[in-house]
Amino acid sequence: MGLLQLRCLLLFAIAAISGSLVRGYGLSESYYQYTCPQAEAVIQKAVFDELNKDSEPAPGVLRLQLHDCFVEGCDGSVLLDGPYSEKTADANSALDGFEIIDIAKAAVEAVCPGVVSCADVLAYAVRDSVLKMGGEYWEVEAGRKDGIRSDAAQAELYLPSPHFSVTQLIDNFAKKGLSAEQMVILSGAHTVGSAHCDKFVNRLYNYNEQYYTDPTIDPVYADYLRQQCPETYDNSTEVENDAVTPELFDSNYYVTLQENKGLFSSDQALLWDDRTSNAVKSLAQDHGKFTKKFGEAMRALAAIEVKTGDEGEIRRCCHEVNH
Image (cartoon, rainbow, N blue to C red):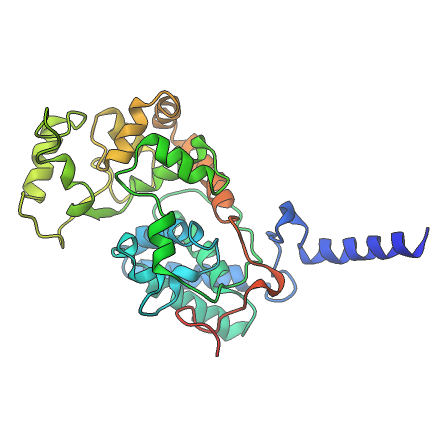
């Protein structure tokens, strides 16, 4: 065996130990096995402790992952403060759950300072928040570095809108390497959480020249929504995404779509499009299938355009870059 082949084998062995060859982008389920073996447990305890006090932020933590990964990749850039950071974008105006990430980061910094990135803390915290809402466990891959820039304009450009058509949704997710089926599965995150009136009120009043109200909304549900959000609405009002079991992470989101009770037009449209309707119907009938596939889709989402090596940093505080 020549020196070159021996060197390659040695590098491969080192990479396998560190987990740097997993799926080609440097992420691994055992990334912190040697540098911070207690990281996952410490983060989970911090998340569970906070959500045991108040479960309301859990859906917000889940939303943070999508809003992070679709802009600059999964690099924790959505967590950064600043006058023009992603947090300030209109598309991110209702984001919450940041305090859970800060607490989890502080907990892991206390045992392994400067080792675990905020992007990885977020990935673990999202999984643990789903668990607390009744969802299923999935293995989280780690090894992301934190980004050093955060741009509101990029958030407006890349984040999917609740007013998107199915074609726009498919194209939006495809640009991030996600399939139409994965888009439908990840839309199931709307089984928890709530939305402000401005995200759906266009469906209730003066919808178009032919219909005053979006005809795809169940009439009784439309009346309920009008009670919550009158024509001159207060946008501090929030309406639950899932009209059946709003606090439980389950497949009833897809059931509501079959009942024409999808809150967003982008959600309801999934039922009527041939490219997505079969997935909606299948997931509505099988809670176990949904929760399993959701974990798989989240792993794919959390691998989008990750920064590894020298591309980023390990922030000491998640809301600011290192000085």
